[in-house]
Length: 245
Image (tube, rainbow, N blue to C red):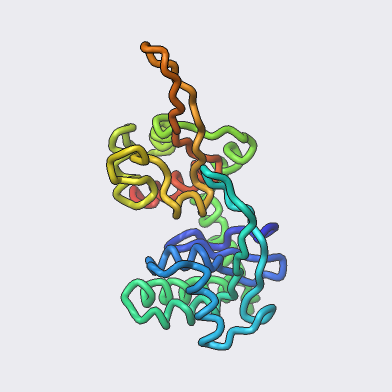
């Protein structure tokens, strides 16, 4: 899904291509639906069961998934908004219905944005609405631009400072707890505690760095450290700021 811009970043990201079409990443939809089936089996079954046609209802692309143990290219699916809406509906549960209603609102927003004003007052109203939207988004856009120019990942403690600077007051310990409770970090205590979940790694929000530690007894151990990628920093600032609006 390269060369696509985010059209709506709410319940789930909706992207827009250069033809002004709204697109949904199937893997992100699978996560948002809280479906417990293995992703590849789930999407192939949906495509076959409902007769979705490649290059009409969806397209496929390869993406390299970085994982602590290494990774390989995976087959991903870019869905049209209509296809994503139908898949959400056939989940037949409250989360699916909630996401479908969200897609309908995105659809309305798209039609409204590209509808040509028929009168001067209508054109002035649309211009005012657009200016207000841009002003509201300005802090987030500036933050995203500053992060995208940096390749550096940061520690969770540094992410808490970034969140504070952007208006969300939270310390390191509460942030760790929040990330665990919301399924971004592993909450089961043990050697994997506070490492990224599979969901987080697939979204590209974290990376795991290995640090060599020399113990007083002369033993050398390797300690994994969770770091937030540039993409993750943008994601969490935008996500948590919505809680204080």
